[in-house]
Amino acid sequence: MTHASFPTWPDSASRLIAVATGRAPADTVIQGGTWVNVHTREILDHHDIAIVDGRIACVVPDASHCIGPDTRIIAAQGRYMVPGLCDGHMHIESGMLTPAEFARAVIPHGTTSMFTDPHEIANVLGLEGVRMMHDEALMQPVNIFTQMPSCAPSAPGMETTGFEITAEDVAEAMQWPGIIGLGEMMNFPGVSNADPKMLAEMAATQNAGKTVGGHYASPDLGPAFAGYVAGGPADDHEGTCEEDAIARMRQGMRSMIRLGSAWYDVETQITAITGKGLDPRNMILCTDDCHSGTLVNDGHMNRVVRHAIDCGCDPVVALQMATINTATHFGLEREIGSLTPGRRADVILTSDLTTLPIETVIARGQIVAEDGKCLVECPHYNWPAKARQTVHMGKVLAADDFAIPAPSGANAVRANVIGVVENQAPTKALQFELPVTEGRVQATGEVCQIALVERHRATGSVTNAFVSGFGYEGPMAMASTVAHDSHHMIVVGTDAAHMALAANRLGEVGGGIVIFKDGIETALVELPIAGLMSDQPARDIAAKTDKMMQAMRDCGCTLNNAYMQHSLLALVVIPELRISDLGLVDVRSFDFIPVIEPLS
Image (cartoon, rainbow, N blue to C red; front, side, top):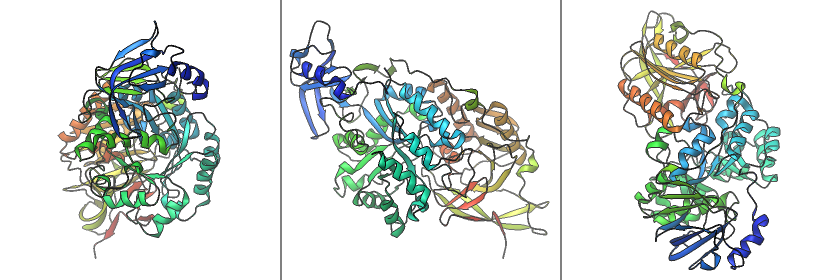
């Protein structure tokens, strides 16, 4: 049964009533559990849940009146009955997996609803790519709701994407069955300055009665923030401190606090609830970006809830932030997010609310996972050749393409350098004095070279700059066609010849991530779909990802989840410095700045 054809509550109302009153038997009864009620924040012993047509008919102390000869009994044995977990903001492509394989990976972790923004594929394949993601999402046995991407490019004039998303595209997508709202509005200066295109996209969404997602990545909480909120975005996940969370909630936004593979923003913001005592209804837990290694080895939303609890949050409050709060925000509180009549029967059985072991997962009334194993099929979309042939470099690159010429006669220069910040999306704007050899600026010490290779229109262009913080040593290079959000090819390295090797290798395999060290390929993750995803199982991709991350460590990098840092270095809507195909961008002012300056 697809998401699109799942019976509505009105379609099932007569059967729900018949089962609840005992006039007809339930399809399934979960018997003898402890009901975690996220509406009232109560834990209620000795309750049963009767299910029919994939929806909850009733939750009562004794549902024996709902049991017929063919009713399936699931013995809860006193375990906690918890609503299936919801991820309020995420990008499936960050898992390097298609929606089907992402679903198969997270179902055993208790995630039964996801609110996904496929703006990665939108930058590569436009509206057609969004439709492919949307259609595969509808095929899954759990709920994958799609937000129509809002910003491709994320910052007009600052980068060149494979495709652009228009207000007309947004209006069209709002009619699709799986579209729940507008994806994160990353062009926050555009909103604050009342850009007509941004306003038209938000108007199309609001006119359709759907939710506008936010992305305010500036520390400025003055008039620019006020203008952004006035424009319509209803949530934000870019906060990094308690002040950010409080400011958003006070202005009527939902503060989405994230724990992804590299973003650790829960501990610093949840204190608005645990310390300041603000109303937790306006805070939502999410992941934003999780790669396959995290999904396989650490978990998904169950990991985020456990972390929130470890940070001092009451377990039931943490569960509210991952269930009913999320559902309410998107207008789905009558569909998902709680174990109450009429809602989809998305249930987790767990023996402990603090450590949250995910023992049994039920989605739409069917057991979909037990003891960490997915028990259902997750159907695949038939991805066309167009989606598998997206790396167009225009030429074979050479070391000279990665050279940065120095001013005539200079022995040294001052370089503007992107500074990586561990476990956070923002970077620092740094300056270093770098030496010049044979007329070329040299990366040295803690500074590496970074390049963006254009891969959408086969222009053959390479933009070069410098980055600090990875700690790479010896001749090496790492290249990736995952380069948020325009998804050209990012290459970071200590040696121009290695950078050319890495870039050309990705051209050969059609996208992915590769590392070369001392002239040898030490890791390769093939991502043939849009250069972003694989339709192979998560465990296989996770194994390759683990090898890739070990290869980064072998090159001297000790950063936590350095790959995520690498993939975001072209995200020109998060301060302070980023690289695009058009140059080095100072996101604080949205201006291009020179890579090198003469020493004064």
